[in-house]
Length: 170
Image (cartoon, rainbow, N blue to C red):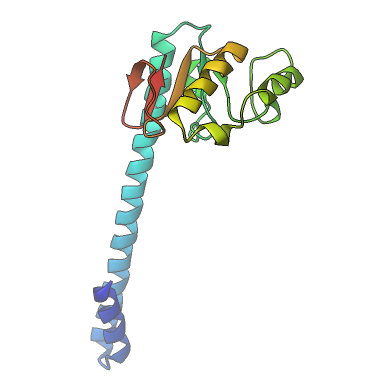
């Protein structure tokens, strides 16, 4: 940043037109390099996370039964829907049926049963409460696997698949 500032000040104060032009062009080139470098790094981070999401789905599609259901909180499938590659049902534990695709006979029935469970925000910060919630949720609605962000919460469930970004528990 200091170099950019010096180039800018130097270009503004310089009386030699050729030198001024050269300094301005150096400034523009430097800005382009900084911008492209930042975008490349950001793009790499996004693409790695996206590949991890694809790999989780591919694992699920290859290693589980077609009838298996996956409990997945909202927000994980920012790149594509869980069912795109996995071809497996997704149960969403953290919102009501008005906001999700859930394989139930009745959204109203789901919402009534879901209302009997604690609020999602009340259970996510405590490991025991979270595990109790997931256990009760799967009793009420089904679910053979739980998919979470790898750094979300450390659970006592068996890890059946994990990559740099996501964990699948059984």
